[in-house]
Image (tube, rainbow over all chains, first blue to last red; front, top):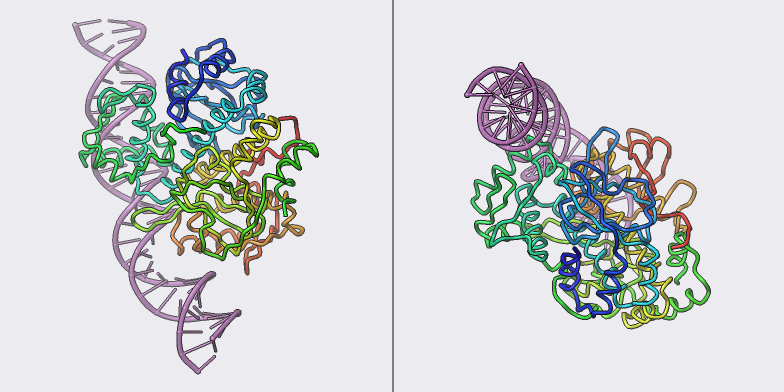
Length: 239
Length: 239
DNA sequence: CGTCGGGTTGAGTCCATTCAACTTCGGTGG
DNA sequence: CCACCGAAGTTGAATGGACTCAACCCGACG
């Protein structure tokens, strides 16, 4: 159940057996959610952090006019609300985009880790820092990239992140989002989202149909996106 | 020199004298930068983290077409690149928007803190988590708020953050940004930025002229921005 | 007095939105 | 078996927002 998490963490640095088992012991009972349910709801003060084990989820905020904005997409192995361990109060919700299986890490256990396992603590801290780095990249994409470039960047990012947790096959990956949900990622209307997808499709670098994204020309996609994976901190080095 | 930092950290939780002095000892020599200089440059692997003591700075990325996007604004007391302690490689630059004075925290000292002072470690971790929360709020603003609402939100955020470090006077604060720089925050052209500012000014909730922002009607500004400061984690509680 | 950086304004173009219609596809019930 | 339905995707047309290009204002400063 925890392989995805460790695949992610071990891309950043080596984990000892002791660290692995200490973290594994902190993560207990699972739970399942249906599509559309909140894994974590806004305003809550969870006593545990949620590890996404299977399925896709997203962090979001809703405005008074009904507009919804996703602030991140979460894939298996992501600690979707590790930040709540210290932020205490959730300032946003997390919704299941597909049926999801999660496991829970008790905050008391996490606190114990910070007291007894400094290196493991740094790795968990790093995990939240990568989240922040992704946020920054999204801000850049929303502010200064063209819409097709933004979409291309998103595909690049998802491909790399899913590759880490072995959820790609060759140059394809499963993307169970509707165009309306993607619009809530990119801050567009559904109609325009559809046209941006059409444009990128026509460019020939990538195809997306039936929940399946196929990268036809990685070089060209990466160039269109100006994608530089540095921000994902994928190299393994002492932290 | 370090008051601003401690004002910020102490809004989140109590710091003991031992923690205060341990952190203070980790933060050494200062340095000064002129407007426009990079405090930290993209691609670098700093051996220390930079604490902004005086002045305004911003994190940014530049795209191939020359477009620049700020991903955060930094005010005195902000650890502008604490994340580099674990991310190692800077994936963005940090530029001085005014003359800046900074101090440096050696990464070896920070590592020692993670090994000897778990609670202080959690507070520093929290500091980076608040950064992430601000990023999320910016994503929401860029994606789904109207432009005037986005600007109003930014003013609310800056007011609250500057209030924490005692850089407000009544309902005014000093904002040493050009409209072009603000445009790089909001992802707009300079011309349109100017019009958005004009619109917000005309609404009467806030005024901005000569580097001085005056909030004329906080209630109305906050309503226009749908500003909820929860994401800044300003309540003091055990972390 | 002239220059330069920053701010402001107008006009025209392009982009993104809304509203609306229509398609496709799976699922469900008569 | 097929008729119907709803969710997702696609397309067209009209409106309004945001961009570029360009001009001009203004105050600081040499």
